[in-house]
Image (cartoon, rainbow, N blue to C red; front, side, top):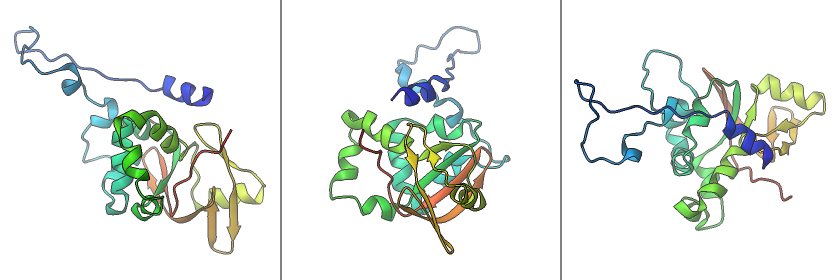
Length: 189
């Protein structure tokens, strides 16, 4: 949990003042939360290479992951400079969880648990296919942002990380998205 706290300490929030052209604060009556952008996650940029969050948002196979990231309010983690590797479970991976699990986790009162599970899918550094194979050859494990270690197994062309099969890798401006077929749950401590 201490590692998670350290991770969130690096996250910054960008807030903007809503002023009229005369420098006076607007009195539109909207709440602060409605006007507060999601930091760098709210930046619209159609020119630069896509970051991890933008790749996930653009993937029809990751709509559940995107909904979970938004429910946990951790979009800002996926747009930070990185480098970062995100093991991105597909919609089918979430569907394979016991019935009702996703719906329960998406409830506001489970936000902290959801954030913990999702953060377990992030690792500092860039681990594409060759990087994963290299770590496996050296007998290393992948360190996650919550302090867990994920086993890497290479069997011919098949690679698994934390028991999840690697289906593909997409390069991002701030790291890589490793598409996996399973939700990687935090280890019991």
